[in-house]
Image 1 (tube, rainbow, N blue to C red):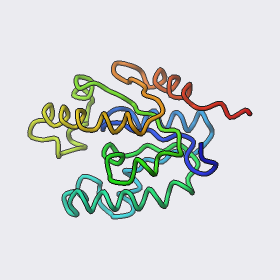
Image 2 (image 1 turned 90 degrees about the vertical axis):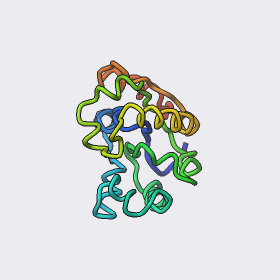
Image 3 (image 1 turned 180 degrees about the vertical axis):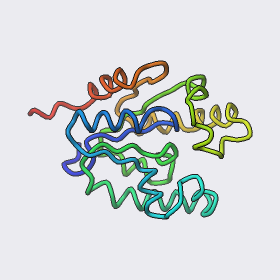
Length: 173
């Protein structure tokens, strides 16, 4: 584990609970919380979804990688990455020194998450098909970059939090 950088990084699809569980974990650990999508929006003045449309996927992912590369050595709290961030070229390598947890959620629970589609308009016109494809293509990447996978489907944030915290390495040595 790296001496500098986040104590915990959460990855997973939109709606998996990264921000909710991330805030709870940060509170429990007594550290700061950051939502990487917010950092991207702050850096560019546009929400990530609009930025993808404006820049194109390749340029957007380059921007994400650069921003993440600059942030990782300086931020020592809990970081929730954007759903697509781990899929950007070079990002899996950036994540290697850190403790990453994949918050896994099934399609049916994602579809029931209130407000998911309005927040991610690129899911339209067929949210089920888009989310199914997203899960199928991203799940192997999430699994690759994560030290642990914690299921979130049908579970309360506090239950997920307990499992996430249990994956943290013991630093009492």
